[in-house]
Image (tube, rainbow, N blue to C red):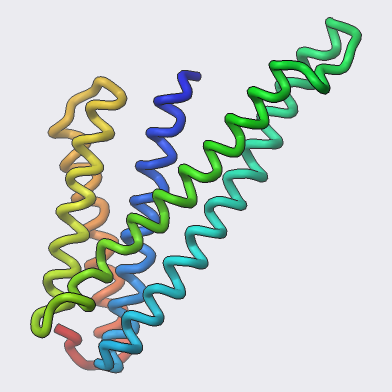
Length: 180
């Protein structure tokens, strides 16, 4: 598969998961109302998510790529250690892992920003910013895959909006109070 498309998919997935996971942390932490607590909880979630996605991507991508190398070695009747193919494989696995972790972290920062820079309406702006970022990811996804951009935009923003709504409603039901 084309490395540009593969890394683009990691950017999309990492950002999508980062935005929505941290938005969930923010909604949950908003019940307490303390901005410092919300920011720290969200940043802790962002770092944990980025590291977990980086490590998870490394483990799964390594297994996949080294299995391909193993299949290549059999008909050649030789090891591909210390070859350009093996070094390129290792490089691609590392880049892929860093892209996934980096995209997760950068995406995670989006819903946090209003809590750092605004005094009022932080949660509402955070949710709006997250859905806007997801819409832009949809545009990127459509362009990357050379598919219908509007469909990707609607799908990405729509799924994100539904997930955020479910999280909000669950916390509203659990706490019995509105957090906005």
